[in-house]
Image 1 (cartoon, helix red, strand yellow):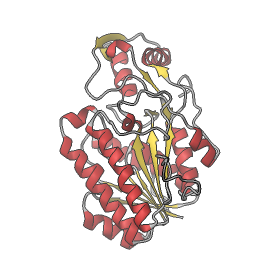
Image 2: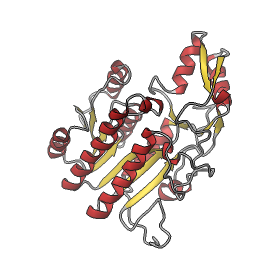
Image 3: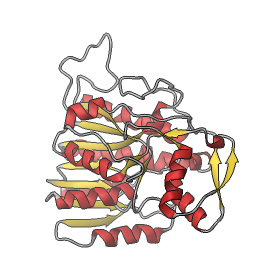
Length: 321
């Protein structure tokens, strides 16, 4: 198939592009190459993809409607995978407008292009951040997620609702993926893994929030990519047993699905740090701090629905990852 991947120079984007190319698809990558972090890392990721005949890269902004329309007119993708977003919970406290442009305006442009060019399958990144105040563990797509704690999570929840409206009005198959703390090679430098490793190797203190009393469902990048690759060939469909009186938040009478993609095995932050210490052969100097605004104590994914839909669920333990 011909597949558009937005955010192609990003962490998850690069890995996704490489997998889709390996599977024999033609891939069009879109990225605005912004400077939220060092652009040279994004350029290096693109170099790692290389220039195979079936890969085309377009530098442009999803928030620019003309760019998106032109791209769809030129390539007419069968599938669109939206991995472009302004990431980071804490940064949303400092620069909220960048989240509105990238995550809301950009997503609207993508929905409109998919509608008018009759894209067969839209897959988009959501986030475990949508669960917010929900403390029912493990997090299930069957739970309502109406209380995000920061603007980042709010924009991701908005994406889910926006996608549903297009699935309902125009029959656009939409699949939303709630990613849980993704890590692995080529990750963003502001991710905990890389902040910790860099500080430990330099014998500088690491910031440990909530005094280490946090739990995360760390999900290895290969498991994310495997899930996406399988969803490419299995678009969302309407739920034939959807009950209007007791609506299922994860499905619809429209072609719409939501899935958690997490390891399903939450790890205490201190255990994660120990695993890093063993990997690098050094002990961390720990600087304990209170919990930060917008942070949640625990994330834990129920991946039952994902497993039932694609016959796969993430399973890479932190010690291997």
